[in-house]
Image (tube, rainbow, N blue to C red; front, side):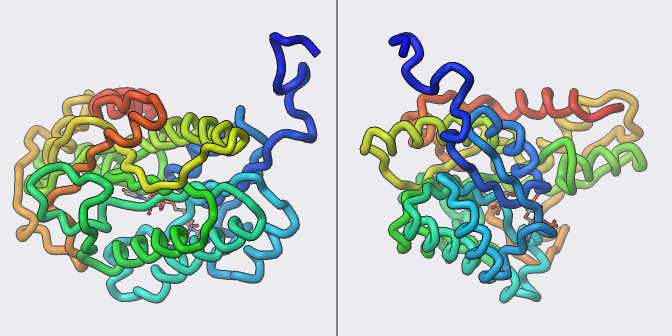
Length: 308
Ligand SMILES: NC(=O)c1ccc[n+]([C@@H]2O[C@H](COP(=O)([O-])OP(=O)(O)OC[C@H]3O[C@@H](n4cnc5c(N)ncnc54)[C@H](OP(=O)(O)O)[C@@H]3O)[C@@H](O)[C@H]2O)c1
C-alpha cells in the first residue's frame, strides 16, 4: 500500500465506509446535512414518514438492522408555541426519542450527534451564554430539549450536542421566508426588536457538523474522543427587527418600505422567548478549529439560493 494513501485505500472506503444514520432529513438542518455529510460515509437518511421517532420499536429495529457507526439526529418537535398545548408530544420527540437513540448508541458503541437550542436558557443573562451557564427554560419546548440533553448525557454514549439558535434556510417554514413573503405583500412590517441572537443558516450548521464529525471519528479511532455540549451559531448579533431589515435590504423588488421596531409585549405568542439568545461559540471554534462567520455572510449567500 502506498504510504501516501494510508486510509482509505484507492477507490474509497467501499464496504468499510462509516455508516451514518440521519433523522429529520426534510427539516432545515437535515436537508443540508444530507448534502454536507455525503463525503463522510454511507448516509441512510430518514424523514418522519420513513422513521417515526415516537415509535420506539421501529427506532430499535432500524438501529439493530443498520448498526450505524454514527447517528445524526436532526429530527425534532420544533413547534415552539404548539408545544405549550401539547407538551407530551414535545417530550416524546425531543426528550424520550433522543434518550432512546443515545441508549441504543451506548449499547452498540455508536457516536450520537444531536441538536439542542438557546431555549434551554431563560435569556436573562446580560452577556452571551457559555455552555456552563445555568439552564432555565421558559417553556415546554425548551424543557423538552433540555430533558433530551440530560437523557443523552446519562446514557454513556459518545455524543456531541450542538446548541444552536435562530436557524433559517432557503426552504421550509422559517423567519427569512416569512419576511420575504410579507415584504412582497405589505408596505410596512412590524418586527420585535427586544430579543437578540444570531440568525444562523442551516447550511452553516450542517457544514460545521460535518467538520466536527470528521474530527470526532478520527478522535474515536485514536481513543481521545470526549463527549460534550457546544454552542454552534453564526458570529455577531442582531434583533429580529435587525434581521428583518437586513433581509429586506438584501432583496430588490419588495413592496415593504419600512420595518418598524416593536416590543415583544406588542406581539404576544403562547410561548415566552428568551430576550437574550446570544451564544458564545468559543468552545466550538477552539475544539474543531473552525471560524464561524458573521450572520450577515450566511444571509447574503442564502438569499442567492432563493429565486427572485
Ligand atoms: N429552528 C430553529 O430556529 C432552531 C433553533 C435552535 C435549535 N434548533 C434545533 O435544531 C434542530 C434542527 O432544527 P430544524 O430547524 O432543522 O427543524 P425542522 O426544520 O422543524 O425539522 C425537524 C424535522 O423533524 C421531523 N420530525 C418531527 N417529528 C418527528 C418524528 N416523530 N419522527 C421523525 N421525524 C420527525 C420533522 O418532520 P415533519 O415536518 O414531517 O414532522 C422535520 O422534518 C432541532 O433539534 C431543533 O430543536 C432549531
